[in-house]
Amino acid sequence: MREVLLRAVNTAGVEATWARPDASPPHGRALRLLVVDIAADVGVAACTQRIRALPAFAEVPMIVIVGAARVDQLARLDALADFCLRPLIEGELAVRVRRALGDPGDDAAIRCDELVVDPEAFEATLAGKALDLTFQEFRLLAFLVGHPGRAFTRDQLLNRVWGHDYYGGSRTVDIHIRRLRAKLDQPYAGRIQTIRHLGYKWADRDGAAGTGHKRKGDTGA
Image 1 (tube, one colour):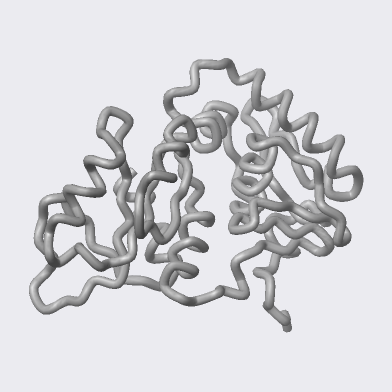
Image 2 (tube, one colour; image 1 turned 90 degrees about the vertical axis):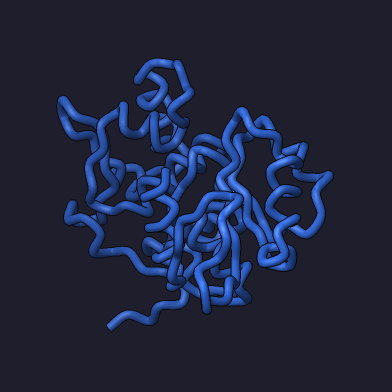
């Protein structure tokens, strides 16, 4: 998780430093944002209060990462800049980091021709019309579109989208892929390509990975 967090924050254009909750900030460096991964066996309120009790962290905007079952606990917390759900999608955290730092990030949403996937709004649209996706269908689509051309095994998709604590079988991935294809329709359904004996990847309409993708706001060449 440490590498994933650092990579996501760096993607947002921010220099990141890993530290324990009771650590002091690096000498001579001003903190602009805290990203706190709260473990399942740690109280959400207790963790954030412990961090806020340190003078150097008292007023720094904070993004917390929690499991979906603990979202209701966040409503009782003050002064949170934002939150992300576990399992973490790197692109989503990068977007939320930029927003928390005051950068609206025109490139937040990923555009693939008429398909737009927006992790911040938790919405996917096709030709301007919102797709009716379930929570996991959206996360799976966002993950695949966010990693164009890269093939993932079913087990990798289970770990990255459903989380390490999910105990269902890999058949779950196949079911969600089938549902996504049905909702996307052609030609976008065909961009979710099956890799025989391996898993799935997202490709552009020519079958060449990633060449049709733009971040929202890009003008292209």
